[in-house]
Image (cartoon, rainbow, N blue to C red):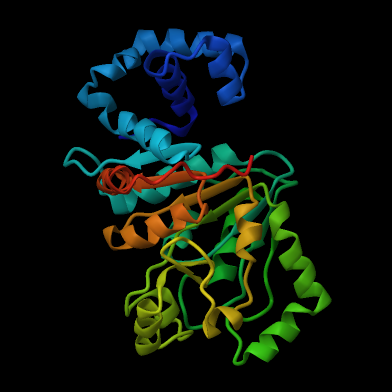
Length: 325
């Protein structure tokens, strides 16, 4: 099992102090906590054996991997869901871990942006009930047709209900029939206001979609399998809030994106805490593209996915993800 979200800071403090050689005041500054808190966490780390991270016991293997991935990529925090036989099925455990982390990241009065898809829907489905009145949960992109499961409005509404928070849905389609119509709708005051306030969110929750024939954009009818295949040949690598990104994580200039009613990608990058949850191994390339594009500050992945990302980062000499702090 991975460290609980509330205990992860203890492991990070020990990692910075013992592995990086930072002074206690430097650890405090980096983790945005008091020096007294650092001393307390280091004492607890010694008592529990976390200070042995340099020699790495089986108990902390995945958490050391998380710290190494943070060091390599510049991600602010990484949580890893193990895949060994002693652990729960990652498909069942991932939403539970993600929901716990999500609650840890929310502060009173926060504005939270939520995207859509199976991963986000499953997180919403296991989200503990909490009383977070004063928090606002907003939809990051337009909506889909009624027959499709895991719709954006379903994800937003359910998370807001679980948190006893205010939910704001996006009453516009995700994809319009023409670029002209999409441009005119974006200019409508109520839609423009909602799009403009996305950059004011304190936290975003989403996954990254793939571009395979059975991807969500194909299943919901926004694109045909043939169109998606063609866009892949033209450079599409993944999907963020319904929009296609290329292999460098940049907005793809294509007809589909120009017909989308969704958060501006620069506005999403401006959100300080960008929580991305990725489980499926098939999403490795989309995840790498999303990381390159700066769409994650907080990441939850499986052990095997974390190792693949770390290996790719080292092999290609990729730099640290720019911070929006």
